[in-house]
Amino acid sequence: MKFKVNGTELSSSIKHIQKIYEASVVARVHDSSTYCNVNLALSDDNFIIESSMLGVDIRYTSTGVEAEGSGEILLNIETIKDLKFKNKPVNFEVDQRNHLQFTQERYKGSLVSVGEDPEIIDFKYDEDRLISIDKKDLMAGLKGLNFKGCDDVNFLPLRLDISADSIRMISMDKERTAVYTQSVELDTQPFSLVLPLSIIHYLISNVTSESISIYISEYYIYFFIDNVTNWWEVSVPLVAVDTEISDSMESLSDIIDSVKKQKYDFSFKASCSDVKDALDSVLVLGEDKKSSDVTLEVFKSKSVIFSLKSYKGNTSVEINASEVSVDNNKSVLVVAKFLRDFINLYPGEHVKVTVIGDKIKEDFSSVALIEGIDYNFVYMFPIGM
Image (cartoon, rainbow, N blue to C red; front, top):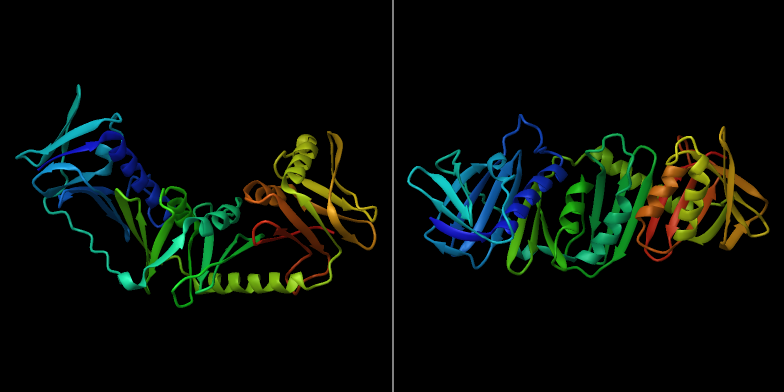
């Protein structure tokens, strides 16, 4: 078996496989106790890289490769991931010892196979039930929902609700909830699932195609990404589905809907850049420049002031706001990090901030809502009155 592939394409594909495993959470490539193999194969002039670990299946297929013969060779990913290939063709050949010989100009070597009969991945899905979703309909939501600060950084859950006319995504940690809704036109029956936000965020962020296709079964979610001259197939088991988490996320989304209808203490609209600049300015004297508590004051005179007091001194910034609604002068204490995270990630230019001082329901404190003006986002987090 002989074949020639671009060195950069091969190296980047191997790195993508590692990143997909890490993003899928159930498999951590950097865990030395977990072995990860890749199968390099030739079939019908296509170059294929396959890999499976802990239930996650990945296949990369590239068309139009110069090749002689067909077959496959199984390698440990550690033996190939750090090879220093240039952005030029690399010649590969499997010898009689089942070693993979490679040559790129003066760079030569040999890789030892770790198995005789690699198992070929069998992706089981119904093509008629593949749902094609525009990348742009998912990307804005995934960017805004991927806020930092959850206790388990390896797992930020994403609830994905898809119907024929809308996509809704809900993300949460122990203190914050974010909801994104996008109108769409899809040929599908309604379904819901919970999976690690990181896996779909990574896949969407690293594709050049305008869309991604998904298939949902009882046990896994299958992704198909067509980049014209190559394509990716990824199957991730739905081991992260937790009925309690899913129900909790649905409940929080309902609470946000009810909060919107509740009497509020004040609200205003402002540009994201003004809010970000104000936070950056007042946090200069904060004990923790990222997450210190900041006082937010709204006045009947239509002014909005961010201020901070610390042992280092005091700072305050007044910003321009519109549609200010307040009965009496009000002030609240907010964790700057909660506000900052959303402002930094939100893809739009303007937001509406609403503060509700009354308890929403038992076990829920006073909250602030940030609503996206340019995109259909709602972000809720606790505050101090």
